[in-house]
Image (cartoon, rainbow, N blue to C red; front, side, top):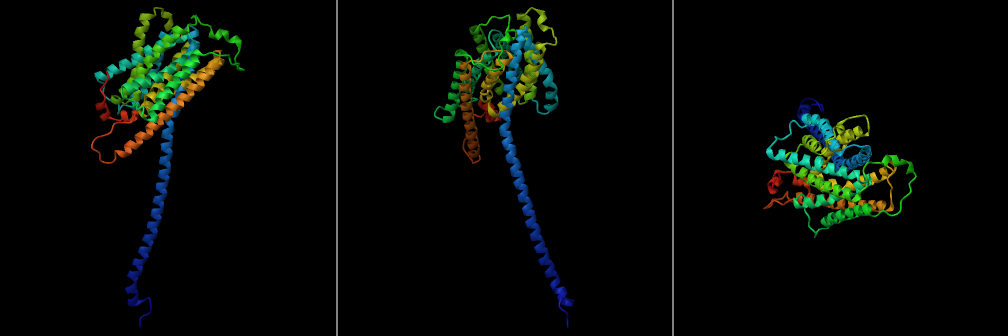
Length: 416
């Protein structure tokens, strides 16, 4: 008689038991594996969501940093101009410092992605160096000599309007007045200009602030008499050069998508072209002397913060958000200058300037709202294009899509 579980019975049932045991272990292992995979997927999803949120915030933080840098430069430059700094030498030294600072980073970090130089790109870089470093900055700081830092910052808010119009002409921005988002961009730009006009022309009663002291007159003394009309003409002309520069930079980045290298080349071209203009217009060689004074601070600060870092950040933001997004934040620097100038340069802060600042900030948020709707519409159109279609759809106003892109380059003619 055979004992249960032993002998032939054990030999017969053992493979069956082993098979069942293996199946149970495999099922448990599968469940554990699936649970681990689900946890990994949830972690990856959370991490991806956080990264997307951070990527969405980065352009706003970068452009706000730019505006604080520009506001600081307005105060420093006005102080140095009051001390006798020449705007011709200032422009040359600023671009030279910027080129020296950013060139090593461009050579190392973009050596594999930097496109080859062509005649068309060379001409664009030369024009970029002429439009902003030479025309805009010389006229801007020449006008500042006849006005105040707050006045200059307020009047420079015509740049968003000029940039929006030129971007629409060159098809970098799509405007459809039947859509609310387009109306928001147009209306917000007009409100911003209206606020800048109020801040410039409407003085109103002075606002007494505890930090304003009347013994600061030695700070604001200057060899130039205050001439708001002459200064306004110079500043407005400079703003036209700045608006053209922003548009041309966006176009150049399509065929030369290396932001650091483009910044270094622009600054080098601006230093050379500005030096030629300075030698023609200013025969006094003492303007080139360097000393440990506010002039040297203005040269270094403007070159590092506003030209090297500023131009690079502007190019990065422009590829993602478009040129209008960059210039729409200009009113922020005006508000900062109005506050800082009131106690550093003892500039009078009036009710008209405060009212204009409030109106400008309102227009700023209207423009940003319109740009956010552009992004939503672009995402919707991108989802639709996943399905087979007969003809590709054009962009909906996002320069990131505009410039993404060899197809878009074929759609728009190159501007030399």
